[in-house]
Image (cartoon, rainbow, N blue to C red; front, side, top):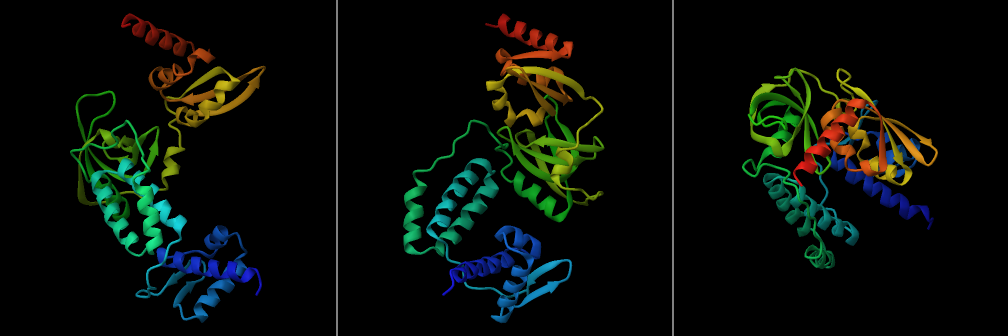
Amino acid sequence: MSIETPKRFDRIVAILIQLQSKRIVKAQDLADRFEVSLRTIYRDIRTLEASGVPIVSEAGVGYSIMDGYRLPPVMFTREEAGSFVAAEKLMQRFMDKSLGAYHESAMYKVKSVLRGSEKDWVDALESQVQVNGGEELFNKEIPNALEIIFESIAEKRQVWLSYQSFHKDELTQRSIEPVGLFHEHNFWYLMAYCHLRKDYRQFRTDRIKGIKSTDDIFTKIHGSIDDYRNEPNTDNREKVRVLVEKNMSRFMKYERDFYGFVSEKEVGDKVELTFMTNNVNNGFARWYLMFGEFATILEPETLKDRVKEILERTLAKI
């Protein structure tokens, strides 16, 4: 038997599983996943068709399995079963109560198809894996916020929000069109088109004080979430340059994009970082203080004055 035969068999089974997991699957996506040519994917699809799997293909669109066709439950390897433990712990920590309950229900179904040895493997790990965090990611009085947001994105219906911004105590009432969710700096953020502001805005999920589904459909066709996260607001951007010790600069890579990072260049034993940021005097100034001991502000002067002001007010309270 050829060494390639088991590999091809595993790939064909994996292709079948992927076809069952999505409505449409593109041949190029399959080729990219399995790192094979399109010709190989076409051949594997023909093999599935020859074995009786009713695959529908449409040129330029992709492949799908005829509605109603299902195979018996897929068996999982021990390693795959172990990965469910991490997923369950992360869901418990990073999701709201409603989605956490749905995932718990789904996990019971997944575990029900595991072989005995895999069940023992999962049981042995569950009590030994913890995911901890100090931030409250959701308003506990709204246990189904993510569920409503997910439904809105999928069904393209507007959502009503009662929201408290960082700089104001009073709540604002908004109608929004959710584009997507992303997790960053230990918080969940909702990217959405805001009808109140007539622009795209980010909303931190822990500051949502009320949320309701509506019957109003989206008024716009929205792009991907990256289209709006990567599109800078150029109205109020200001250039910032800081000179940072090399050993410190590498630790800043994880957050610098959030503050409008543009470029870096080596200057002797230091690194000069350039930013174009919308919030010099608050967000950037306070971020700078995290590593200020190892960095020099080159410009603007207003940033230097703001950092001094924050330090003086801090010292006065010590």
